[in-house]
Image 1 (spheres, rainbow, N blue to C red):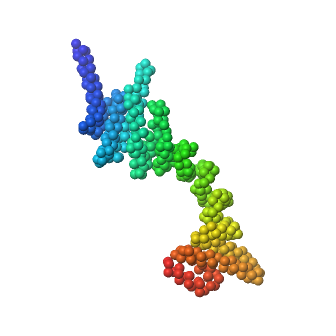
Image 2 (tube, rainbow, N blue to C red):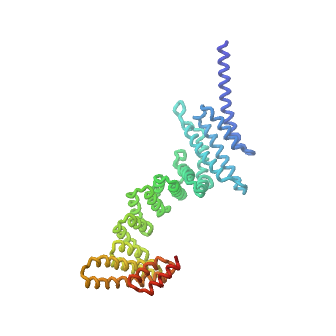
Image 3 (cartoon, helix red, strand yellow):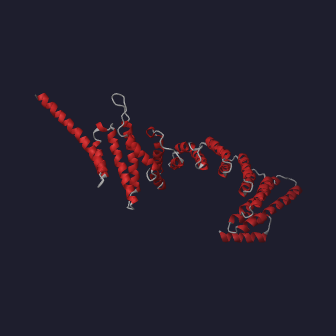
Length: 409
């Protein structure tokens, strides 16, 4: 008799625990689905209590109910927006993502084979419907991801956009969702979010997947290039940017940045090679000739520098920097000649060379004066003039320019 009583007590205790588990889960569901007065905080508290029983942690129903809580709260917030009531975009988005992750867990356990090895999903059909709504209705995942992006929460935006991108590829969807131009757009901004979140390799993965798409192809290659630079992967940076130069010949960004890259690492000849390509593609762009002149100045090839800078002036006579650079070309040439002349031991030969040098110095003056005329507020154009007037003993001009410089400092 005592054994029978003990067994009854154990059975009663087990039934009580089982009932409590179901009560809390049912409470969570009822509070979330209450049409008149939903209580989402109460639903989550009831779910929390239910989850204290580890026996339900591997049941699809548990996570399905958990997913319903977030889904219904997200839906309720949107309904407020429809009737112009105050609503919480952040609360809606957080609830939506909470729902998404819980539903994923529910699917995981819903697809577990039974004792006979058969899969009999109970919640998959409903979850599929919810996921379709999250994907197709823009105020859901797209809207929340855009909200996070606008708030510069790039890590959050990345997770939300990744959820959006994952849905059409789920086996559950059975290829029923067409991945259209909107999908490409979100893929692009997922890459941008990853880049801003400093997840450079992930950003590259998303942008690389878009190379053969039609969406923002120039932006795709620009972003890949920038991400490789951020990773200090010079080899892949050069490979990407050169590929873009061939694929997008009408986009100057790639040539310009490649030229700047070679200039930065002091590979002037490589820079000139691609600069000449840029000039072939845009022969009337004065800036290319200006940069070409500067590069030849770096190589102390004054003849080629002068040709390029004069061509730049011909193309755009309104830029004071070009005139100043041409003045610098003559000035630097004269300085180099002076350094070489200092080695001449014959006085007569030296004096003759000194006259030649002064004539070169004089050639620089009108270009600096033109730069000053175009932009009289720029002191940097006047300082070389002051040096030239001093060098050539042009005393009155020297005094005048000195006063101008002093007044501007």
